[in-house]
Amino acid sequence: MTSEVVENELEFYSKAEKYWKDVPATVDGMLGGSGHISSIDISSSRKFLQRFLRTVDMVDVTEDFLTKARSYLGEEGRRVRNYFCCGLQDFIPEPNAYDVIWIQWVIGHLTDNHLSEFLRRCRAGLRPNGIVVIKDNMAQEGVIMDDVDSSVCRELAVVRRLIRSAGLRLLAEERQENFPDEIYHVYTFAMR
Image (cartoon, one colour):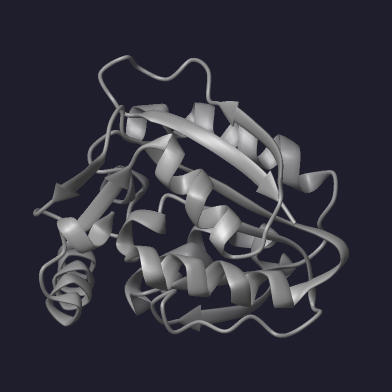
């Protein structure tokens, strides 16, 4: 549980925000120096999402990453309806507005309580038959604190418990294939 590794919640969030403000707004920066896996990740995510979604909203804690996303996306950027600059602990999805809420490589920046609360708000933001998707790193065991970017990496059992605590039902769970062995295992969860 994050309560065992996060001593000061306010410091946990402010350290993460400071870290991301100092990280270059590049693919390599966002992936912590593992930009070489970007094409694998982008290909699988894009392939999945483009079949279903015409417009998206983007949320990021740093304005610089949102600005860079606008230029990086080019013509595809016209599909972005809103850019929200805030932490997910403060983000409230518009009720009954989303077919899919895609949460990727950010749940480690939320405490257990805030993740559960955020997922509850996401559930309220779904249209009928909508889904919430989480794609993130998973620890082999326990909860591992990363003091560099002020995040945690949770084991599968903890993430499943938090999904249930938010009143969501797990529909599918899949481990990402073709990623380097030296990084955390990456899992994708679909729920409603």
